[in-house]
Amino acid sequence: MSYLLRLVVPDRPGILGAVATALGLAGVDIVSVDVLERGGGVAVDDIVVDLPLDRLPDSLITAAHAVEGVQVESLRPFAGPLDTHRELDLLEALSRAATSPPSTLPVKVLAAELPRVFHSGWAAVLHATAESPCEVLAASDAAPALDGMALPWLPLETPRLLPSEDAWLPERWREMAIEMMAAPFGSPWTVVLLGRSGGPAFRRSELLRLVHLTGIAAAVAHLPPA
Image (cartoon, rainbow, N blue to C red):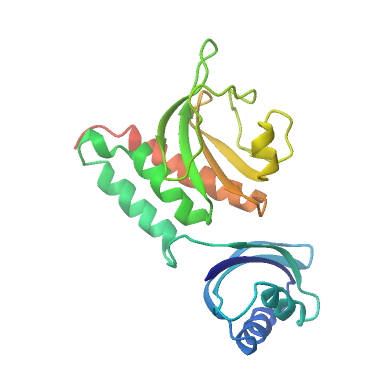
């Protein structure tokens, strides 16, 4: 079974090698590693691993803690595609969408592909006005029901993190610890929303990546026909 392990590690040479060795000794296969942030003498890494069926998830935490200075921020099952070129795949898909029929508009590609890029559970592109609640323009598999939902943070002028304890969230969502982040998509009333249940919380570096990719998708969406 695959898991997403988020670690806070000392930012020094050889630390990832030490973590990889500790996980390997525990019989864990590393599938991919993403360095999310660096600063203040530490780095935040997302590591997707395959755990043998005869091992308990707690063994991942024990193995990681065997390396001095390593902290486990979160551990959750991971069921997404296990590839290492996620952003390139998204850009390629957006490029194809620019010259494809309307049924494959960039908003649909963006919603479908972003969960792969961010190891998240789902993504949606939403639109609202001052007079009407939100409408779902496109959504990935596993996205919750968002049509007609009141979003008090719209209009969205700047990207923002939406922690799972925010008061506007339905109680059920808070119980599920749904972490989210959002970025404007061409206008403050149209947004890209990403979510994942049970954490880990999105970080500022992930929000910046979302802004970058959303900006590209918005530009593609407004290109004239070829």
